[in-house]
Image 1 (tube, rainbow, N blue to C red):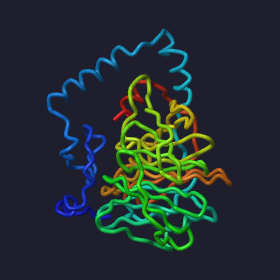
Image 2 (image 1 turned 180 degrees about the vertical axis):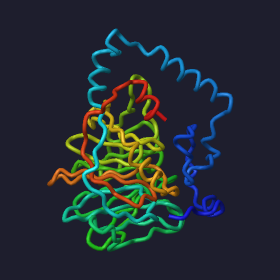
Image 3 (image 1 turned 45 degrees about the vertical axis):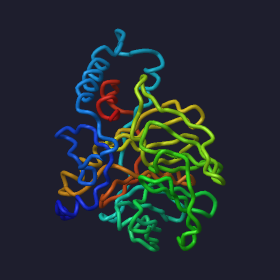
Image 4 (image 1 turned 135 degrees about the vertical axis):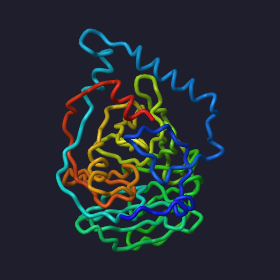
Length: 324
C-alpha cells in the first residue's frame, strides 16, 4: 500500500497523547500529533522515565528469577502466538472494532474522520458486503454485538450508535458515561468498555450507565491505553494501544490474568514491504469453532491464530513491551 502524503496524515490524524517510541516501533502516521488538552509537561517526562527505570532496576527477584508466587503465576500465563491461517483484509480499513458473527462473517468498525464506518465483511475474501458510513464529524471506535443490535462508540465523545444487524441502518444514538469511547465487548448480558485509560468499565446496555469499573494493573503499575476489547471464555481481552500486546483481564475484579505477545505479525508485514500499516488492533472470537482472529489498522491481512506458551517469560520484558 502506498504511503499517504504528510498533508493527508495531518488532516486525518487521531490526536491521542503519544508515549515515547523506540526506533523498533516507529510512530504510526495516525498518531503523530499531541492533543493539547492531554499534553504532558516536559518537566514530568524525566521524572516519569526515572521512576520507570527505578521500578525495572529494583524489581524484586529471588534466586530462581521469580519476584513472588503471584507474579510467577502471571508469568506462567504469558503466551506467544502461532498463525493458523491468513485472510485478506481491506488495507484501507482503520480497524477500531472487530467481531465474529457466525457463518464466516465479520463485523468491523473503522475510524478516521470522513472515513468512519460499520461494515459487514466476508472472512474468506475480505470483501465488504454491507457498509454504513458515519457522519464526517465522528471518528468510529469500538464495536460489539448484543442480541440483534450492534453497539458502536466514537472517539473524543460520549456519543455512540446502535445499528440493525440485518442491514446496518442506524437505529438510534446513545450516551455513555465513560471519559471517552475506545473499545466495547459483551458477555451477552452487560457491556464492557474502555476509554484509553487503564479503566475497564461494566455498563448496563439499556441505560449505558456504568455499574462497575476496575483499574487494571500489572505489578502495581497501571496498564494504560486499553483499546479494542473482546469477551473470550469468561475473560475480557484488550489490545494495549501502541503495543503488540493483548491483556487478558478478569471481568469480575479487574485482575490481570495474562499477556499475549504478537510482535511477529506487525514485523512480518513491515518486512514484506507494507510500510503504511498502523498498530495492532482488532480481536474476534468464534465461540462455536473456538477460532481466534486478529488484525490491525490499515493491515492487508487478518490472521487466525492460536496461543502457545512464551519461550521467554520476564517481568522486565512485559514492562518494556506492554506498559506504554
